[in-house]
Length: 390
Image (cartoon, rainbow, N blue to C red; front, side, top):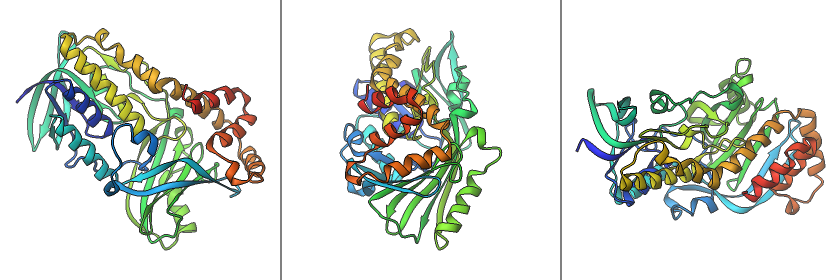
């Protein structure tokens, strides 16, 4: 086939959810992935919350590396704040997880093609009507009634369609992560380091992956990236704290910490996932929110196929439903992130010194952020809104 109802570009969680949702409504759907394998390379810390994940798929031990029940936060002077999590979290094997989502989509009727590098759009009467792509050295094209772009933070498709996808430096982190072996860390605990000595304008993380392995990475805010190399800072950290660690694989890239793009639709096109900036602006995490956005985009695509209207106006329900489901919370987290960015290392140390006196059983992420909000009272209401999910 060369003619479809829906083409989804990108085979990550957002793309698989969008493709599955469209196919379930009877749309002839194909998902194109530029790499040779779904889920590879892994450009992610691989952490998710159990509660959010279970809304979409039942967790499978085969793609869960570790179950997380504890959190540790370290201030610039290395003061440790330990506490338990109210809900369990998982560190995933993303490659296997992404396979599972893509397989779920295929069982709903989605056709999947890998090694398909989309390098152009078919546009007729100011409406996206398909894609041009390269496959095994050949130039091909597919037509469709609409296209969903789930092609990551760079979103070539969005740019080719003329949507404004540029992100300010302050709204992008420079990230570098290594998956390392031969280290001794608590396999039930995720570890966060905050402060300019660890990661200017961002944070450093340790996510355990079992069998003496962990994802160790950091993100440096874009406004500091000229003076600080994420690669050099991470390897300096590894040399100092884990000198016997073996680097099994590494990855670098931009981490969007922006609000969702103002415009995520046009005639015949929707953006979703990282391409639409559906990423938590404080943590940089985007697996679950990408799945939320992808499913909504796929639902709206299915309705458009049934109605025969593929105009931007016909897609109005997509940004509205996203804003109701996650968008408002993301805006609150964005404002929280702006407030945190203004807090100095000395202030972070003072906050940690106060919190360390509190019994760990009385601590939570909400209490941590509330303590931070004391230094920046204007974000207190946003902290309440974000953690209430409203």
